[in-house]
Amino acid sequence: MSSETIIIGGGVIGLSIARELHKRGARSIAVVDKGRIGAEASWAAAGMLAPNAECHADDELFRLCTASNALYPSFAAELLDETGIDIELDRTGTLVLAFNEQEAEALEEKYAWQRSAGIAVEKLSEDEILKLEPNISPYVHSGFRYPNDWQVENRRLVTALRKYCEINGIELIENTIVESVPSGRRVIVTAGAWTNDLLPDPKVKPIRGQMISLAGRESRILTHVIYSQRSYVVPRADGRILVGATVEDVGFAKQVTPEAIAELKTAASEISPSLASLDIAESWAGLRPFVAGEIPVLGRVSENVFVATGHYRNGILLAPITAKMIADEIWGASTKISDHGVLKASQ
Ligand SMILES: Cc1cc2nc3c(=O)[nH]c(=O)nc-3n(C[C@H](O)[C@H](O)[C@H](O)COP(=O)(O)OP(=O)(O)OC[C@H]3O[C@@H](n4cnc5c(N)ncnc54)[C@H](O)[C@@H]3O)c2cc1C
Image (cartoon, rainbow, N blue to C red; front, side, top):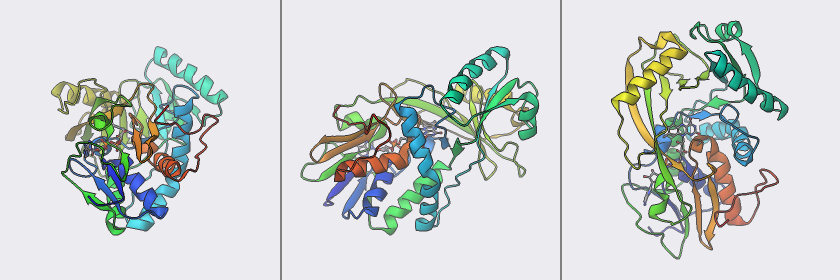
């Protein structure tokens, strides 16, 4: 490991930062991972880019997510150009559905403030929903469409970023645990849920998410990303339908449980009864890196050490803006996301 810049953790965050630094002219970069590159949370994710459907307030996280989402069309196009890999940015949009009066009221409240905050959101009646997605349950009550909430195939994203590194001489060191932050080099800690093995702060907690994918049919059953109050479904271009996800505070246990698989299948069938007959193709779990406040910690820890962690539910979405912010921090520029500016790790 003689490289001048060492990135510890080869998930979507570490790889995106490696690419951005290289694009800005840095050379002699190594990405080190304790396992296979990109095989942890970044592989386990659903790939939703949902700054609006998942937002609960017009706050800093929302502004960060929105700014990163806006970078995705060019991020996807550049990666295709650079690596030949299509990360399948799908801009069909996202539906959030209510299945009873109570759920509809809760969504209505969210809709009211989102409209006043200028967020693109369309209210849909039951008929309008069934016209958009004929295979949705007839028991649907009402819902909302977020045209600017998209999805990418996050496993292809990780593969594309890996390929960028390989093509451009960024060293990838796999199956190598870094035990402590090395000195004398520029170091960027992007170790996700394992950040505290390397840095005492910020405090990062693993939050397990279990998911399943259903074997698709040739004709796509659904086209939008769709949320109910109990689950979400993500139809992929190859016909698979992802269903997620649990949110569990169980430490570093990464097992998949039969109960969760059964619950996810039931919850998906509530959204669309057509999903009930599909076989479960795959089940898996990943560990989201959670920090208090649910907002990532990005910035400088000491003169040569930087951190980008705590992306929790939004690490795929936030990868492009994170890479820019860390590169800006290294070279003294400032990414203006909002009046609150860049979050500093040292704050
Ligand atoms: C089920 C699930 C669904 C999700 N859905 C979405 C979604 O739809 N949209 C979205 O935006 N986000 C989603 N997320 C969140 C997203 O996956 C994460 O926020 C993101 O992947 C975090 O990226 P990361 O690079 O920080 O972490 P990781 O991908 O976990 O990468 C960290 C890497 O660091 C390595 N590492 C750790 N310690 C060391 C060490 N000491 N030495 C060497 N290497 C080390 C690990 O091996 C790992 O590869 C989801 C997450 C889960 C689990």
